[in-house]
Length: 130
Image (cartoon, rainbow, N blue to C red; front, top):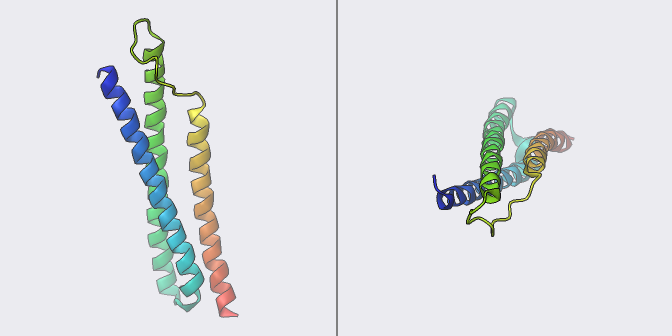
């Protein structure tokens, strides 16, 4: 791939990671609102179904985000190496280091939000039964 294609791929993958995190947040807040409004009204079977479906989709988004941002980091390393080569046309490109911290931190935060939302579901369910 030439430099243009690498940069285009980098920004395309970065856009995909933004879409994944936005979809995860949408799913998370939909689950929190549903938990607050109807968790106490669900019987045990429906509780298992709702929590299982939510967990599948939420963990899927987390895994996809983790994989996609891993690709971003690998591509950023390649672009940084190309930028440092003599005669490179990528002098304008500013890809900072430490992307792995964002990768690990955001993935961990997403997983903690998932766990907190499951806790909230059962907390709201218990409060509604009282």
